[in-house]
Image 1 (cartoon, rainbow, N blue to C red):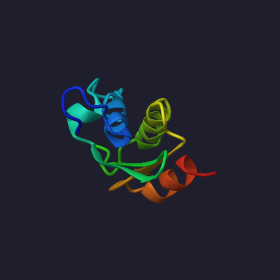
Image 2 (image 1 turned 30 degrees about the vertical axis):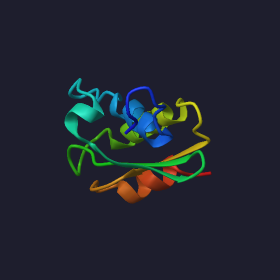
Image 3 (image 1 turned 90 degrees about the vertical axis):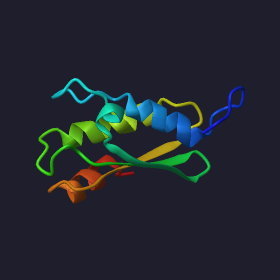
Image 4 (image 1 turned 180 degrees about the vertical axis):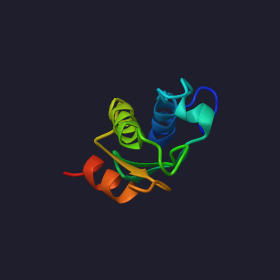
Length: 101
């Protein structure tokens, strides 16, 4: 994290943005629920975000993944956002569809 007066790193700004995504089932943010498990810059402007839905059977995990991707892409400096769902029965399909070129 940046100190007062210093600019935040891109990964920190992305984490801040994706943690504000609201889970429509609970009305809580992803940050409040602790569902964002990792945010890292893989290469310049390419961010990887991992999240774990509240249940392995969460019916809106695909929607959440898309909402997270949209939020990350709105952050200035992000060229590409890769979003990975973890711990969901459909995680492989969700990850493939959300990250298709």
